[in-house]
Image (tube, rainbow, N blue to C red; front, top):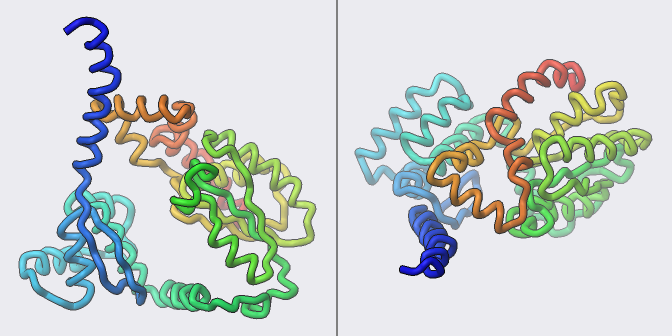
Length: 302
């Protein structure tokens, strides 16, 4: 094999094989059923997650082994909402999708959660939303949506651009804005951008509700706790954190280990992303930041 062919094999063929193996190694089991009083049709990552959704949660006990195993899981829960470490154990013992479904089912047992979800479902089904639906004609609030990673290019696929929530809130007559943070920015970079926006909007007569998801979470946290600490605008009334990765993104740390780190580096290079900005959401950086800011945030928000 000459040098030119060898180089071609290393640069193109091996990465392609790795990508194909990685993609094919993620099992997808189709599921259909009712969940949280809504119809669901999707795929999950394991047979047990499929059975859990389609049978166990529907009261259909068709597999004594899986039924007994799941019964024991419920029996060992000491808290209504499983703590982080317990969910991590469940993810390993069962699967990540099973753990996500299990958490949602536990949240559904909380009456306030159920009431809010039912009302939300009601609003989604209401095609004639108007400002009078929530009596929001003289609403004193302004909602700021802080988008997630890569929201410009892929937000329409992932929901990171908040397009649908913004459409619904606009129909309700509530003032709202998308904070156009850098789509591939680091936590610190996005926090600086958000802080500047908050300083400008703090002059508004409206109260501010900040809504952020995923990678926006740590940026909002840093901005509120440190970047605008001296100003402390009094019209910031709430922060709705939707799955914000405040302590870390386990996925990032997973792809820092060999051999998947090679695939990660290729993907980052191909997309033209800055690796250090992605690593700002890793366990080491996130946990240090979270511990440093936790006391300050409680003082600021409460």
